[in-house]
Image: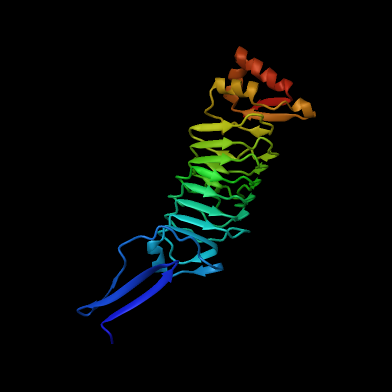
Length: 291
C-alpha cells in the first residue's frame, strides 16, 4: 500500500485537506492549522449529513432542516426551517436563530449554558406541557427576539424546574403574549413583562423569581397575581405603579384585578400616599388584593 494518502473535499471555494502519513508503524492525521470562521449555507432540506470533522473548522452554519453530526464546536446556528423546532444544537452555541413556530415539549434547546442570544421571528407557541424544554437551563441567555409569541404553556408536572424559562438569567416577554402558564419563571434574575393585554397569566406562573428585578410595562391592562413576581418591590414602587401604570378600564366598562404581597397591601392601606394610590386604582376599575 502507499505510504501517503490524501483525502480532500471542497466547500465554498475553500479546500480543506486531510493528510495521513505513516510514522514508523502508526498512521497519523494532520489537520490544517487554521479556522473557517463562517459557513454561509449548507444546501439541503431535512436531515443534513455533514462529516463530523468539518465542525472542527466551523463557527457558524446556516441551513434548513436538521444537522446530523457532532456539531459541538459551532458558536452560531441559523435554521430557516419552519414548523415545530427539530434541530441538533451545539453545546457551545452562543447565538441561535430559527424560523420555527413552536418550541415542543422535548429537550431540544434545554441547558445550553453558553447561549446568549436567541431569535425566533415566527415563534408563536412554547409548548412544554408534557416535558421540559423552552429555554430552560440557558443560564447566560440575555437577549430574546420573539415578536409573535402568543402562548407559553404551563407545565403539568408538580416540578417548577420544568418551566419554560427555568434558570434563564434575563427574560423579556413581548407584548404579543396572550397567556402564560404555571411555573414559567423560576430562578430568574430579571423578568420584564410587556404583555399588557394578556388574558390569562397563571397564579403560579412565577416561582421564586425574579431574584433582583421585576418590571411591568405601562398601560398595564391584564389581571395578574404579582404577589411572587413583585415580592421585592418597595412600597414606593407599588405606589408609583398604581398611580401611573394601570390602564383606565372604565373607558371600556371593564374591571381587572391585581394581587400583590399581603404585607405590602397592609403597608399601602396604612400609608397616606399608599391609600390614595389604591383609591386611584379602584377608580380606574381595578381591585387590589393581597396574597
